[in-house]
Length: 385
Image (cartoon, rainbow, N blue to C red):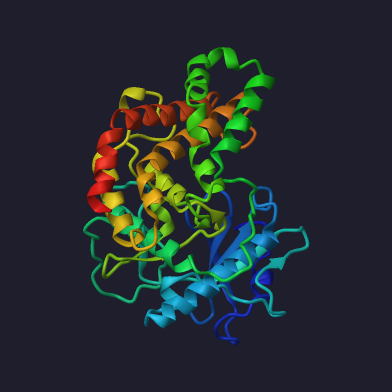
């Protein structure tokens, strides 16, 4: 059991039934940032209790304000179309003093959600039937295998973007400054390269030259935004396939989760991030670069699923840059891994020396593969636009 007094924390929230009480808790999910627990209550109901990692999310109050505004807006949209908001968006539980988070005596921030039943998640790009169930509250019945969960997940992220596109003012908080700005990520890389505090630059000259030779790519999308050629939109900024819950009976993606990074940004960055995660051919830190690249088949499925919804609201300029966004996000994440390696591995956790450099190499190899197949990628986009 964790050292946190979860029963005491749970008691500060308002459950659906005021008579129910804390019974047990277990660690839950595969996330690496927040601490997540599944709570079982006295009337056999589950809740999800999370400790927000305020070392990563340094503005937890603003994070919670964003999540509350987004989920409240989504509930209205879902109700208007006759859906079920208890299943199709996250439901925050209020505290007993009508707040959306609890701060414990150690300064930790906690939130609680309803636990959505009869759903499953898929790991990133997984083609198998192995899954992580999001709830053990089974209601019986046969589980179905989605015809293609990659395509369905992309459509789910597009539906999320569509539904939050008209969230009323004020602008959502930018809870992590310049999070999806590749220009900023390039500046961070250059700074780490110039400082070279651990004298590591000599061992990654090819990666440094690769990055420097693509300096112009870093500013393309941000320049389009500044010139108002593409709009700022509400972005999810963590569009991994396992952030979509699938109904176990229909195989449909019904709910987008992990909303900590929802903030103002670029819709097509989200698409690029989904491609980076789901279409990868190898592990993120694979050392054998002959195994590394991206799957054109999965890119096609992601594009088909995403544009089946997103073509309703994206501008022509945004669609024109979808293929580029996939390439750019892989480049951006590679820059971040390289900068962290040069800075002493201060942001991304490592299990072995040089792991962040290996991660950088896989991203840059993927970028190279995308550059070589870029005309085909654009043709795929044009097929579904």
